[in-house]
Image 1 (tube, rainbow, N blue to C red):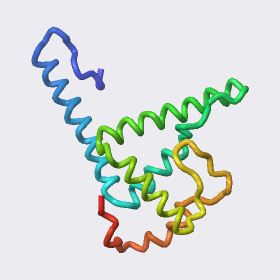
Image 2: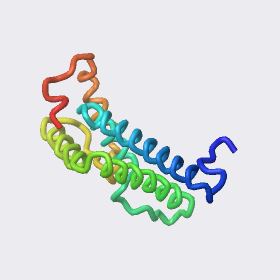
Image 3: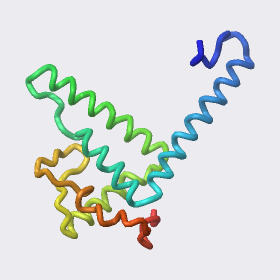
Length: 142
């Protein structure tokens, strides 16, 4: 009973209030994503989440359980991409560009959304020095 938005679907006030609450909740979710994406470190973190979801890889492995697991990861990735596009449509391309620049500058991470990084390293490891607490001047260029 505690999670119900509407107890009586014929009550227009309850329905209207439930819609308002859903809109407020969704807008807060999108604002939270925008907050994370406003900083380069947040975008790097979000990019790593997308990388782990293997969005653009084939889920089928020949083993039913592994295939189902991979599809579950891709499903999470699809939800993240949908939320990302709702919150900040250009953010994916910004992250793609930033990842490319990091790779060109010698980062040991060769992963991207849908590409598994079996080298053992990641751009997160390479970027630990960035977390000294001081923001770079271009961290909020977005």
